[in-house]
Image 1 (cartoon, one colour):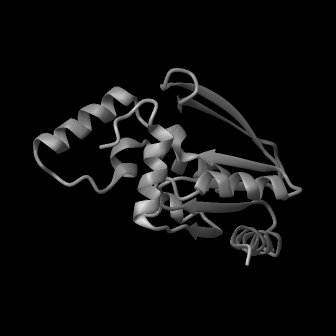
Image 2 (cartoon, one colour):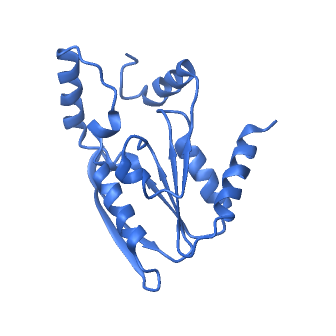
Length: 183
């Protein structure tokens, strides 16, 4: 059984069969390194509609802020359970979704996302993206958001990926090996 194609087909079927007049908002959540970005990209490439992927990694706060917060947790010997709420500005994504959700798509929808985290250009919050959403578009939100009701309330389809803890840890360590220590 080809799990990837079956999952893709299942999700594509859910998206295509929706009877909605304007747009469909799909969320893909799950732990780090489970494949959220890969799945979002595969789904977007298979759809023949206008698709915009909102990558919640864009809402990461400056690296210096995140490093200081982690030091605080370590120094106080506290658990660090809610990365999305602590390290990301998810209000930015929620505001975007609210505007899309409430927009009358008889008119053009253009939105400028600014001060986004830019991993490719020095890990700074200097990325800006102009978004044009048309009637019948698909918006995919991918990242950590499940515990954030002001995002999940706008989703038409909510996908939660899960995986084996050791495998995910191995993937994460491999992905960040050029700029982080394994521990």
